[in-house]
Length: 150
Image (cartoon, rainbow, N blue to C red; front, side, top):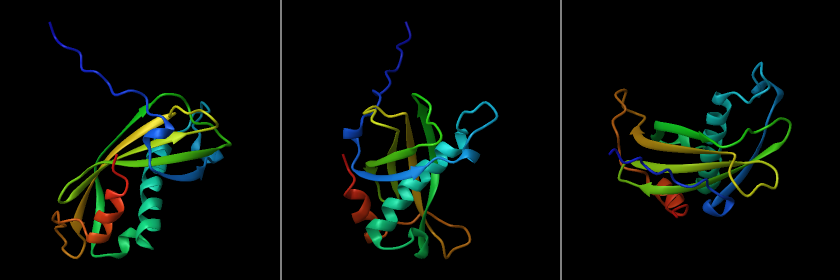
């Protein structure tokens, strides 16, 4: 008999370390009144970027080593609606030599359970080399992401 893999439970606000807020826009909705999947990924990217900007004191792409998304996914639990702010929680599951594994929770209203959860692996590359080889995390980035470990 094949064993069915278990899924991790729906995340709650307590699972995340860093918080920011974004606002949904009318243009985020599709013809059915649902928020476009691409918008969820934009919010996930925004949450990570806002944390890094705050932690290192500026844009994370202003250094010679930059992070690029190597893997991204999203689990949807309930719709995120318009017009309403979205609370974005960020945590880090793993810090490697050249990569960081993040989780981002999207919350709306007073609900303690996430409406969606993004999982992202960011690999740092040498932005001065056209081949963009993987490179060790800069010390400032490492300190910023280690602070988000759970």
